[in-house]
Image (cartoon, rainbow, N blue to C red; front, side, top):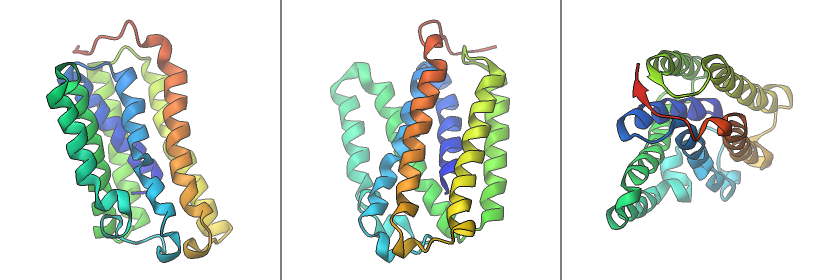
Length: 203
């Protein structure tokens, strides 16, 4: 997936997890978005990646993500209070890998991935209406829509306007982790005032 898709997928999973695991959405969402920093491993062999490589066989953190998944899961086994968080974050790691696998399977087709992004945004809207996240609906949707549009615009600018060749320009692979980090921080700053009074229940 491109950055926008990963952000939306993380948001969708955070919504489901917050309800099922009784974790405040306002706390869980930025953590799940930040989990996509897994993509920092793209920097290691960027000169071998034309932008359509299979991350699961080229990028180190993706290849050995099973180890990370187990460690997060194991923390939950040891510390009972962290069980739900462990389950949620390990799920976010697995979701990132799933998104990459789907993208490779679709040959990184922009149209198809754009359709998936649209479906994810619709899912977030429907879920945010049904689940009492404690966050204002319109600002929440504006956040996710803006995050997708801006991240896609930046990556499109690099690819189609500047015409940067991925194997020759490490900046192409620096952009995604920066986007994930800024998105997670922005979410926290926008909605942190709601973190105390949030109670995730079905309306």
